[in-house]
Length: 479
Image 1 (cartoon, rainbow, N blue to C red):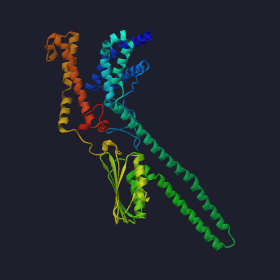
Image 2 (cartoon, rainbow, N blue to C red):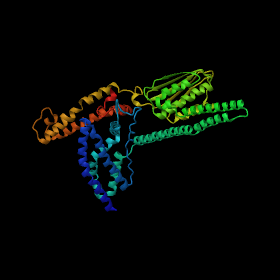
Image 3 (tube, rainbow, N blue to C red):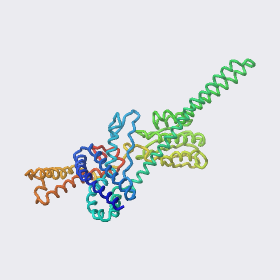
Image 4 (cartoon, rainbow, N blue to C red):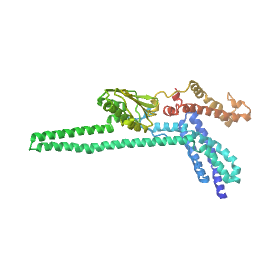
């Protein structure tokens, strides 16, 4: 047992051969990526550190039994093409998803706190191993356990990362459920089109032939057969209307606004439609909103004796708001089976709410709101940075280069090559013993200023930053 523990300790210490060069390489790559604009180096640096961190988690789970969960936020979903087949990233359209996917991954990695916790773990890990070295040698089992607890502190999952994973899982589950429902609706449409509709057409043709063959009472038979044929034609028309109601083509092709306008044209009431949606919500959201409006207009005409109605589709920040008002006799109640409870259940799949105001005598107003149903990049004013933060951000971007390079890396290079030129480099004017600490401090200060310049807009509104920022312009959401 003791020999096995000593062997495990030996493996941990041997990893220092990889960690120390990786620390130096990571620092260089981070400086070039963050301060020099070579953003393509950031993702490889994060992947290298994450692989080493995952190896550490796996070894410690196997050796100590302490579960160290991965703390990373869920990966962004793959880019989805628009109706024109193009992929959008910020304000640019691309023919392939490669650039938008790369931008999304960059923003995902740089805003994930676990990325920086991994870097901090890598930086401190050699010091921690050196501190625990006596325990590793004398009491290896205790040393391994303490080291596992230290690793879990920085490399383990947090409450925020667990919550983010659960939310991501719930979103995927909800989308799968709504997509499955939509697929089932389309299957019903195909079955009706290929089955029932074809049979009804055949019935019409058969009755037409029978009409010609009847000879006992030609006039009466022809009249009956003509009525039967008319009935089959009416049934066919009704079935086609049902098919359109299951998944109306105008909804898929033209979007929610035009689909509701088509409903208004088919309604026996005078319906006015106001649409203020410059872009389309996701398809499942559109379907839920469409059928909710359809049910409300149908209720107003059949049960409320309404003669006119108004439908308003608009955005409330990232929320989709729908208001339907009619001049009917009022008194609508979800408990009376008016279809309102079904609408509530349909909206509940998207965390939507329904508010009803229907006094006796009317009018009836129904307001539905679907939270966060609209794309963040056009859903209205998401809140810009306060003036003082914007000024601080401008100061950071304007000055962070100075301690990083002229006062950091340049004097460091002069020291390494023993170039006898002090110029305006602060560190080189100090006593020898303070020169390297000052150089390292300047580099750390410059990098901290760059990270703060990115962190400020991220913490202010992460959703907006994820949509609008780009690797080359991380300050864009603040403009």
